[in-house]
Image (cartoon, rainbow, N blue to C red; front, side):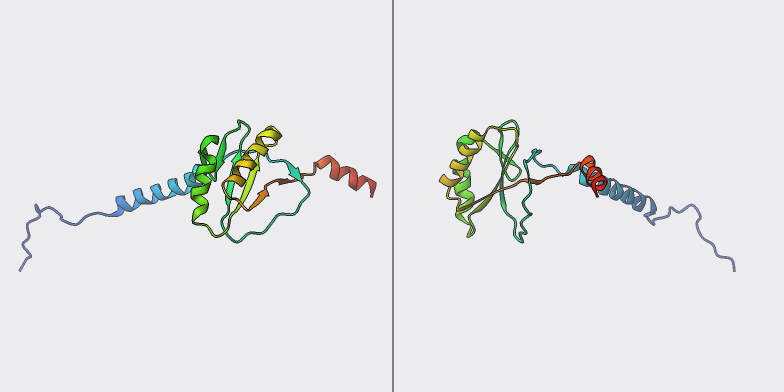
Length: 147
């Protein structure tokens, strides 16, 4: 007895290998491009010799860039609405602590004006964010020669 079957029948199984290949390629593309999509506000902070503070909670950060644009975390805000928006944000917060990041190239008067707006919004503690002083390679070589 020979097996009699219709060889003209269509195969109804789905070949998933091409789908898996496409998904793996997309996964690799997203893994490579995801770090490039992270955006923030570019600010040249002043350098100091102070030690960094350790914080376990997410803080509210006000940033002023070199074009005098003001940001609450990563969202740009006009100076006219800064105090109003901060009041709304701080309403539901138990901790009224804010950190201020200001570009070293902007005027002192503008920073003081922003600080005044922050205090008017009900900020109780205001911290200033700075960069640690970076020592140049020449300084290290000169110190080594002295020893």
